[in-house]
Image (cartoon, rainbow, N blue to C red; front, top):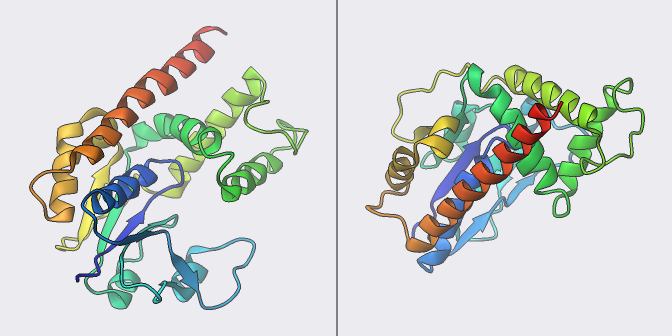
Length: 237
């Protein structure tokens, strides 16, 4: 049985979980064993994990023979990944500079709001962000559900700036059969290109119907909820 490995480098909230989730779903839907986000470290994690620390200490859980699909929230270190796992497929989710405003909306809605109840890392990330700007957010215990309209708009601009500084709009993707670029625009505006890329990554002809249904559901919710909410917020002021 093959032990396939997929490493997805992405900015948290910029739809990398969509990519890993659909790959994970493809395996589950075809009754193939797969583990998701089972990265382990060879020493205790620090409070703030830098890219250098991550790449020095990470590995995949060796206790399973299943395939692996994992998100890595740091810019890709191609040499590190390919040295550790020469046959791994490294997927990098990129976006353009012009996408950063939309990416900020996605981070707020689909990362902070959408994952708030299920992921403590999301809560820590939100808290760390607003604590950096006490003049805008004097109450450090506030949640994203309790922000005023002005605070929501302020956070949106902060997140947009963070998306720029994260650097995913400024990457050179190596020409390698095991390194793949998926563009943010493709996922939300060019579904046929995105689906073709997924098939290429998975080395299959067509995606399982359950995967296509999940992706279609995502697209419907994304366009209706995200843009509807922000259109209301920004046109009502």
